[in-house]
Length: 502
Image (cartoon, rainbow, N blue to C red):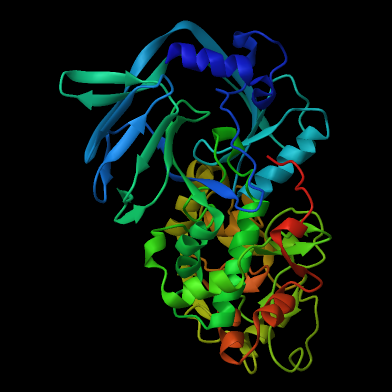
């Protein structure tokens, strides 16, 4: 295992953002991990993490039937209906010093990526990391982009987590990455996944269980969990196109850790593909290999549960460059409500939109309209260690709205100071809020009532709206054009080579 790590260090200078050529310098910002292969070709395959940051607890690999087969980097092989694994720290022959400058944490990958791009424009070899929250790392001597705070982290790595397999005669060390196959599938988190799989180290010293899953099979595990298997055929087909497009466009999301995507809400929810019903399978078949593009590239295929009647500009959720196909618009029949027009920058305009429900698509969603009462305990938890600097009582104050009326800057203001939450940090900090399309009213001593609409960031397709439109007889192309105007639905071979990411 020690030799394996040093070999990776020696081969991964570019990924590490290092400046020298020896192994010690190459560990400058993190433990380098080989990047996953590109997702392209006629039958693309995704590397999806079923579990990350492994190493603290033992791991059981259980075959759905027959056996699990395992082979490590040294050529050692083992098999059984159940394989028991664990990790144990082993000393490195030579300690590694890791030093990095850190931006963040950030509320989303999108925001972290924009920070990384700004840093790269200054010459830094910045990488997006996810050690727990989204961060951006580069060498400690790199100048920091304006408006970003940073800190320097330094640690000496003297040991590595070695994976071990239980054998009749004791525990055997394995050299990663470890390949895993199960002809009838692997039982995991209450489901069965076909694989093949990999157990591999990440950039933080822990390990990841990765499934290598063909793109179309991946959709069987995404579409029903994202929009619901009972959605109309056209809505299911639209979701299939978007899930496929999103996966291709975000394949660099976890490149630092040697895989493409996660399986939770930081990516797209991916679960047991066997649960896909006939309608889901037909939607995937009917759109097989089709992606939504803008100027030959897969779009930033964001979607959400409900837009509350008005879709958002991408800049209301993240600090992204302008995307012409993600523009604010009323999502209703018959044009704008009487007396209203975009942009909706005033509180009273937003209140009027929330009251004007006639003709709005997707009204059946449970969070189409909602209320939340937040008090001082909620604000104190949200502020965390910064609560003392703000003081009490805290008053939420809207500082700025985007063109769809969503709050893009919210202050938690107290007698001693304030904490300003921006864009995606608002819902990430005040986790009880379904969306940022809201107005605020006093609701008693120290209490504030948030009255809002929709669930999610509001940009791109509203799943509730697509279900409504599909039920009205709209086609998949009509639904996609409605939510992403100017885009084109094309087969995979027609898209241009994707630009490098991460």
